[in-house]
Length: 165
Length: 264
Image (cartoon, rainbow over all chains, first blue to last red; front, side, top):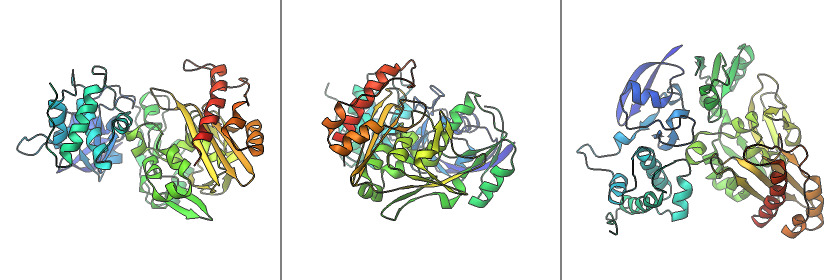
């Protein structure tokens, strides 16, 4: 069966006809061509597909597009300012090299932004717990955690701390 | 994923009537178990009835000194609720440890217990607090709700609407989480109501059950030491690639001690 869904994605209202079994991640990538949201494991473990639905982080491979009907969705493409200025969390990931291959990065950044919005000054432990739903197979998480700490400070209005080296 | 027809009823009556009339319908709550199951083609219902549009199923409220939590209340909303933190803090702690942050934003109490995964966290609280599971047609005692692996006392088409948790004098929950899935390899919920104590274990066997020997030991002395000497035989416990039955039996005692240390 097909259904019509209307969502606000990165500030733009979109209406599309979708098969009811369409996952939100496929809707974003294949129909809206927003390919910044990645598909990693496709089994609800890795978090590469994390987006915000009505302000909360969710795994878009584990939600139907029809479930998101009427919702407001933000993807990694919607974080930076219209002039291209990176979101403080994106800038922190770049500054602190919170990535190696970069595949998990969009999901990591979306989770980190959600975490800091709920808890503006997370401890290192809280960051590691808050990122349990995101798997990175390159970095060992060390620089990701540093990046989230610096990103949190910058999101709270501080200046972005430079990497030590 | 096989195709299906999607329904989003706006009232509980419509949801119940749909589930009663559809030949091969399945309720969709948070979908954090059901959608992965459908993606792997391990299930292929003809119809999905999404409960997210039913307003009567959401929220936490105090009732008769305890808590009544709507079936569609998400784990994150239980974990973050001031009321839950005040009335039964161990329940907020349990909900905050389910899966991961993204899963907690979607998964629901009713979905978790209706699915009755042997390693889910909530069943430990339903049994450990002697909760009452409310459905569209009756109330089921927590002790009678889980009947087997992924099996419950629910009849076909019967919908969980809320769970009532009585307020204990003290309660604690500790789990040994699978490092990948965060499911409980073993989770132990302990609650004291006056002189009586309930101990419920999830993750170890096919479904959440009580441990009478630990309850007796803790009724005599409500301390971590009292439970440290009580061992549970491995007979009938789950054995899989994550842990043997003997290892799980050992973990029950360890987690019971930690639940006592986490008593709040």
